Structure formats: structure tokens, C-alpha cells
Length: 155
Image (cartoon, rainbow, N blue to C red; front, top):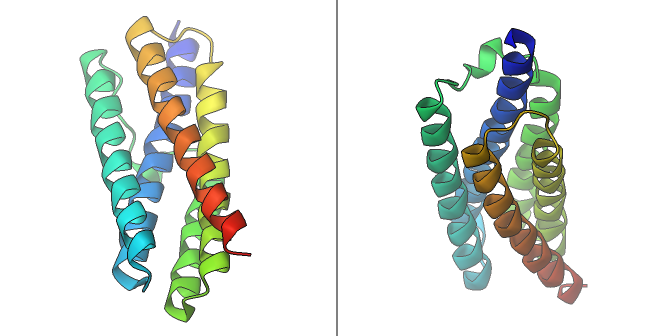
């Protein structure tokens, strides 16, 4: 039971960090990007990720599964690669290359989609957490598809 709980916490903490990275990335990008339509979309997704984070963390606390401090988390290498995507985005935003910005956003969304797919398939998910993950995964997929559509139209 203890190892199952540890595995569950690891999966959920990866989602927590994925949401934090997405919120941070979109928030930073929206302050620097010039195109108003991108500012609006980035703000929408920053707010979405922040709301998802709060919802997931609250559910974890209700089940006594407290989010780990990132410094203690064993998924640092995975999280680091997601964060690097958003750091790459920051550099592109200052150059204001719309297609390149959207390419990086889509990479971040690809990562988020995979994290949610992995979490959704985790063994032993409490029903409350599974319902939240499935609902949030749909929002992540919609964000991914929106970003991809914008990127495709920017060619």
C-alpha cells in the first residue's frame, strides 16, 4: 500500500509541476508577446492552468496526498525538460516570431497532454482524482488543438 501511495503521489506531483510550468510559461509569454490575440489566449491558458492546479492540489490535500516540494521530487529531469520548453519560449517571444512562439507552446502542450495521459492510466487513482484528471485532460487537449491550429495558420 505504501509503494502504491508513493507511485500515486509521484504521478500527481508530475501533474502539479506540469501545471505550474504551463501557468508560468503562459504568464511570462503574455507579458512580452506583441499580438493581442496571443496575449488573450495566453492569459486564458495561464488562468486555466492556475485553476487546474488549485483544483488538483485541493483534491490531493483532501486525500492527505500533499504535493511534494519540487526540490525533493524525483521527477526533476522530466520537469526540467518541460520548464526548458517554457524558457525557450521566453527567448522567442522577445523576438516576436509568431510561428516559433506557437511551435514552443505546442511543445509544452504536447508534454502536458502526455502527462495527463500517463496520470489517467495510473493504477489506484481515487475516483475523485480520476474525475478531475479526466476533466482537466479534456481542457488540456482543447488548448493543444487551439495552439496547433494557430501555429498551422501562422505558416
